[in-house]
Length: 471
Image 1 (cartoon, rainbow, N blue to C red):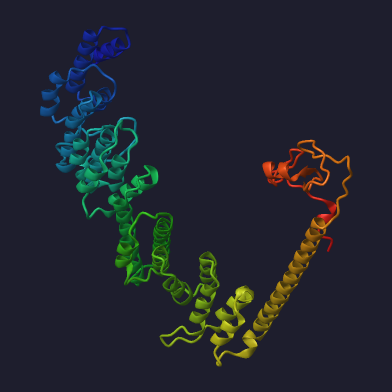
Image 2 (cartoon, rainbow, N blue to C red):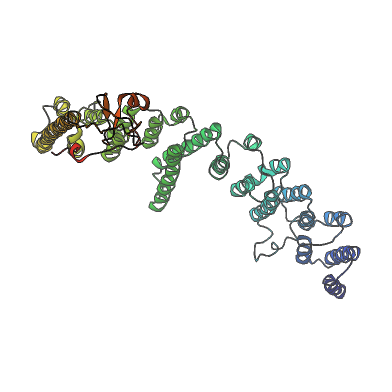
């Protein structure tokens, strides 16, 4: 029989008719089965072949070669039957079922048949390959659960696959997801929002809530990690930092989620920076400043937020928080002095002095207050200079206008209207800024914006050297 198999393998390389190819491949599978060449059976079944499935189904099923049958179904596009077998192999693993389990085609795995976990993983991997490519939504959702039980990464890859021609319905996918498998739910929503550009407020809110709950759980676990070694603690800290960073970036970037719903979830937690972002979305400026200045004690972030608000009263509000933190806390004089040093020039000195406490050490703020007062006086004097210069310029311009309007024009008996060319004689006349002279009748006809020479003063203004301000 070995010679016959070699002959049939050689024949497969020749140009045969479809009927002949079916006969060769089907007979070859029979011979492989008779010789118990499991590797060759699976290699043939998983590659492009012309085997007649109807003739081999009973043989492979009865002999327990379910992997070969699953590969054969998959190569023929019979996705439902193939995935069903991989599900059976994953859930009903036994030594008898897996006595012929070789390495995966194209791999060099040396795992033994007694390794149940590896058997489950292999079945899930093969099933996921089929489910990632199919657009059959019902088939995917039917088998998603058992794949997720084995490997959540594979389940996520199935849902977010770009291989299928038509993507799955997000509503049906989310409805079918197990609520306990938060990781899959979270990564699927992330894919919808970031990769697919989904703008559904419900999905944005759900994603923010899932991230918030995960961050809270991780933060709580880290605070109770008394028995862990330093390496495990460092790993936990890195994970929490990464998770919170992802949450913070999303809360800042998206305007589609409901901040109040998210705030209700983290209200009792220590996620203060996240709370600040949410209150900022809600326009609660005072609470944001309280969190940044008092809870996080981040003076730079608090001042930056005041700059983004763009009003001087925001700095005064921050100064109030530093000087009177309430709840029994000591005044934060150093932070107050820093604020006055950086932004005191733009603040009203009277408002600042009214808020300074008598308990504040004078040596801390004296230089800053003195510099602020000097800047205020300098600003006032600069304003006076600009005001007086503006007045002088205005007076100069008015004088020039008066001189222009009062200048004399000499006409002779030969002077004519530049418009109708009639002699002016003793008629009333008008002179335009470009020195053209017209009779009063022509002036009334053409108005004061266009001269007799055709110049439109509204579009083409004219300037004379004598009109320019000389000061």
